[in-house]
Length: 157
View: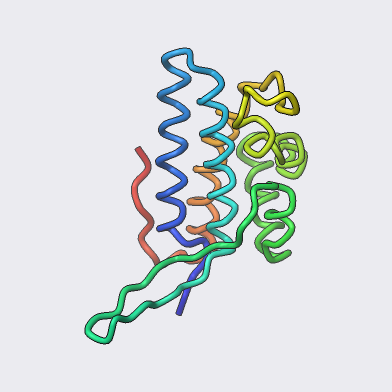
């Protein structure tokens, strides 16, 4: 049985969220925001993952593949309605904010801000995206505990 969210994918997102927090600590706002946006993308993809097994004839290795794309709103819409409802409720309970509004607000930050030198790049980034990425990190674990209460989830730092 394969369960969503995929916590291997979540742990990948955590690496980018950790990088965002570290960049922010050292006043590197732009890379902090880009890493935060990428972590949010990966957290959403943890609900869209599927297992893939690759064999070389001797051994088999499992991987977690995810949908492609950087638009947070489009990724969010691909998540099953039941899980979206759970995410929205738990996010509202923990932050008092609307999850869909946040996702829409930051839906294309990674795609349009990662190459700051380009003329069509976003020219300013709201650093609140870093806090949102931390909230999303917590939200994935919260959802996992609700969806799979008997499964032990990794400890948060």
